[in-house]
Image 1 (cartoon, rainbow, N blue to C red):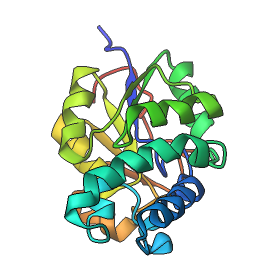
Image 2: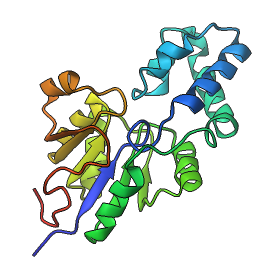
Image 3: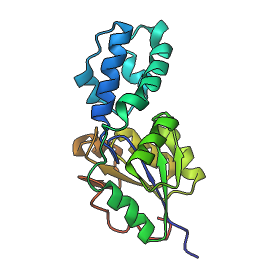
Image 4: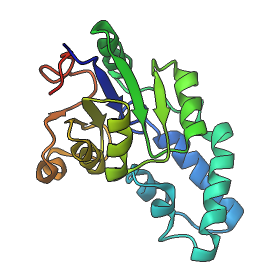
Length: 204
């Protein structure tokens, strides 16, 4: 009996271009903390958890405070300025056409991730937030995902941890050379190009 199709997606730089909102929030955070954050450099490294991104630039005893304040500033500064990436709606719709479910598994704080989903009208059935790297594997397994689409090498690791098909899109941190050692099943310029068979209703 065919297994129902479930496709997982990362959010930042996979479905949405987070750079403008992230940059605006970093600038406001740096001004509040009195810290000169290298905004352009940090927005090139989207993917890891916020404390990993901020860690080298914020005193350790203020890191938790900085993270909390970033998340508080984010809804006002980062939601409406962030656009959907080319092919994102089409990729989600392709899953629907094959009778499948869509799962969002992201390192982003879940309430802020949901704000992007709502603002951009992303057709997502379930959202799991604050999970990164191999820990994404557990969420993917729990929801029966057969495919995970992401832009970062650690998204590949999450798919591998779940034992499922990994699709890397080159809209964020991933490049073909950086993905190669992690061996994603498929590498695509954007979500607009679906790998052969990724919408099969059978388990890989």
